Image (cartoon, rainbow, N blue to C red; front, side, top):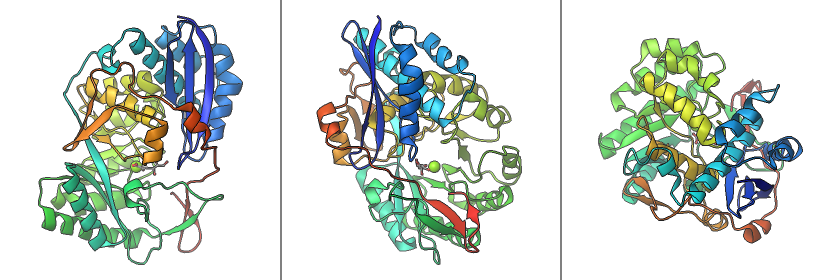
Length: 403
Ligand code: KDG
Ligand code: MG
């Protein structure tokens, strides 16, 4: 099954997406997501200038070999750009293989290991009352797991909080927005939010929280301890995971479950945290960690060490990447939860898909073959690329901090 064409489609139906479409001699095509938020065109160049010329003519059935060719075959390995490009190729090849077999992709991955995929939505409010109200709206929609973020008194912009509540999208502007951060204010406030949410809705809903890499290990440990009474499903990205030894400090002090890894790209970024049982959930995702093939390698290691998956599924993961996650989630045993930030309607129109949300879970249409998602190229062409940046953070004394 010879690959005869591979093209990159960039579109911006409300936000930028990079999509790869691979066509085979048999006429079957597959699609993959290569979106890296705020750095989209770097992946386009990596694909078009370096990988695609060597992909044409290869046998689309040899997914592992093609993955290894682009992974091991590169002297300059790993990193978000390289791995997003490999991810898109991998997803598209799995899509082709499953279409050729006339099966939904999860059948090729071993079949369903569960009937449905537990997902979490994002409740974010500008202040405590607003956040509590937002949680109620998600419960009304049927969500069983909700990530709660809130504006912090005294800080103008807070991560995870935006006026467009249902479709939180941090990338904007022609140049990066500069936000101000203060950990002291944050730590004083966040436990009160969870106290109020639990007082209002009880202990049945799963609650999650994302600190977005802003704390030191001991601050993270202290937050984990303060949140223990509210029984979180997970506390995510407390510290930047470049210095992974930091997690030992957090782990020593708190039983709040820890999640990390949305910016990780390979099993080598995760193995220390997994094999030392320093985390409970690994957040690597299809679009950034080498596609289905990359995720399966990570999940297999995690399974041995009691670590479950929790794939990143923010709006910068396109419906193609999200579909790849759902097929993966449904087919592995050590699945934990899937992030499901809904896309705006415009995006759903450009990427018609077949995953179904009901009562807090997503199911996949058994009659759709492959990934079960497509791209409407004509519609995509109406939304050209727009330069957008993720914000940056400074502390109140104007020194740089992690966003
Ligand atoms: O591109 C950055 C977003 O994907 C990120 O801010 C979202 O942290 C995030 C999350 O957990 O969804
Ligand atoms: Mg996150």
